[in-house]
Image (cartoon, rainbow, N blue to C red):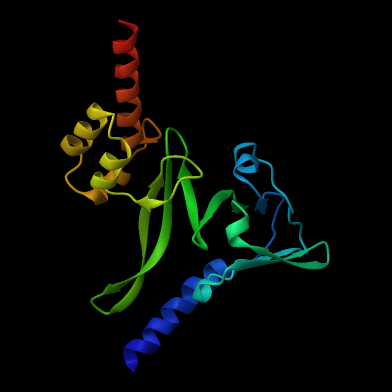
Length: 197
């Protein structure tokens, strides 16, 4: 009984965080398509009196907007994602994934409830997709190796540079990039120089 109450409280806290937002600036809106996202074209740009409700509690399939005084419902499966607080998010299987980096392939993060020693707690999990329309997959060495089978040097560099999957999200503040992206592009440059010879 005590554990179920703790789980409900944890779910409520996470849901409240991402469930509804009042627009603070013109940087909150909806990306209807992948092309809109690539072009940075927001639809339904929210103003001060507009609201966006993500309905993440219990995996609801729609988002609700109050836009220019009108209430609207959009299916998460029919839109690409949204922008809020200067961060972009992509919907995949009715869940919102925060887009961290788009160079080469996309990196995402999402808070997931995970069983800890004292009950469930939100933990940041990391994911990737080969491009904006491909499935979102857990960020692991094995998954990356499977996604880029023809890029042998990249696969080898993953195995030699990362001890475990949790290190894949290492960010280099000096070069202002994720280490995995550096290795990915280093391998691409090596392939290009071999092709030129």
